[in-house]
Length: 310
Image (cartoon, rainbow, N blue to C red; front, side, top):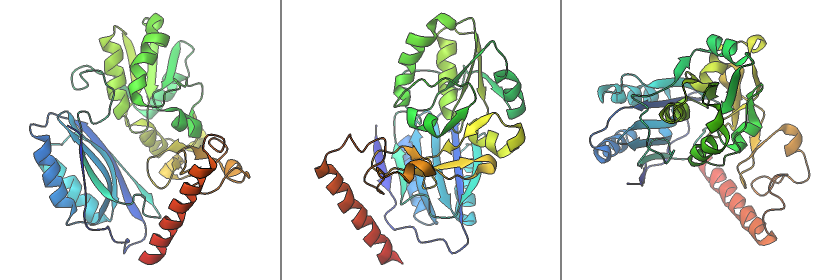
């Protein structure tokens, strides 16, 4: 099961100032994921929404953006479907953060590749203030469960980078690097909390005893924690047009290299190696001139499409 359906009609430019961005997930048994996918598709054809929702037998996950009416309509629809305990966060974007609306049908709402039971076996949730107290301790192993390019944009002080390119690689990291630390306190975090639902379940399943994770993820932490009390360093990578956010869930200054996907600081995007949509310091030597020419063609087509919409 792995199908994607896109909204056929293009999402119009917001009439109001800015976009409401909603990140949500819930692990909940879905009897007929394909039916839920279709009914979501029917809904999003009638409202001003863009982004991605993933539907699976284990629940729903996604980030979407739209006007207030659209976001509220989706939220109410999901409540009516029994998703009454969603982890749900809102922020804002000045520009349209996604090109289309996609409804994906998958085996997992976040792909770990190992069977775990996040509804039944999960680590201790910690609110931001409790989180600060825990990770300041010397006897805690702090692990960033996100991917390498996300870690690069920012992370918590003292956090370990597992150097994974996908979440599927995390179980192997646990086996190789954490097996000998089952008696330690393990604290884990991710963008919105969903990956840690599975990573903490995995560790408990493997015999770890003291496993903690940040409830609501980095986004909730940045929303609730004043900058002068924060242990966060840098910006939080997000999977939309904003690239990254910072305290108060405000848009950050990082930009994304659309050739390789890595976040770039203003200093990195000012380097000669950076060409919008074509290359950056991290990928300029990893693609051929023929590939770069193709990227330039793609960028010119994107720019032409944008001008046409104006």
